Length: 261
Ligand SMILES: C[S@@+](CC[C@H](N)C(=O)[O-])C[C@H]1O[C@@H](n2cnc3c(N)ncnc32)[C@H](O)[C@@H]1O
Image (cartoon, rainbow, N blue to C red; front, side, top):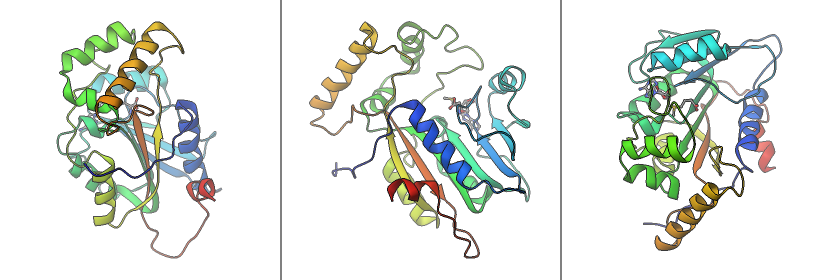
């Protein structure tokens, strides 16, 4: 395996949410309603893009997860039960497509990415999060069966509803495109700009320094050493900030550029 390009890390979950929220806020314009598609919306999101000025449409294959989102979380303007591989929005396009921890579960992820490319407005943002298949966390989830994931969520993470309708974990697939290399290549081949990538450390809700968390960290470090450093233990997930080029020269300084300035 080739040495992998370096990746900046976010400072945990809250910082990652802030980084992505800032990206979206940076394209909000007064007097214009931002059209956001949350693709594979599940039960909730943790972004904070301010009050008003946007319409949030959620789409998900799991009707029970969508029902919880609509009835309990109540933050969607519109909820659609649908498959990202085959959904049809007609001529409708979106300023932002947000896709969090979905692609690793989809056989046919390339088709989903093609649809995102079509559904995004010129100048729009596509924000994707996936577990890095070459983090110890992602590697372990690829190499272990689904029943093991359900047990891990129930017994280690303490999710009582794990495996029930509407609740994760969802079956892990990992098509070839669902990796840093795959997303980079997809962007290059489809005229998209990969504006930023971040690695995101995550404790999955385990309290700091709890025995369970220490055990998980020890396992991750051991596997990093055994893999001769090829699997990363310092972060689990990757965030991709992708931009679809604008048609005319309309240049605002986006948050990701400001971050690197
Ligand atoms: C791990 S959950 C993530 C949910 C939410 N985005 C989050 O970050 O909490 C994965 C979600 O993707 C949805 N999903 C999986 N395959 C899908 C597909 N082909 N089309 C639409 N949604 C899909 C699942 O139903 C589930 O709600």
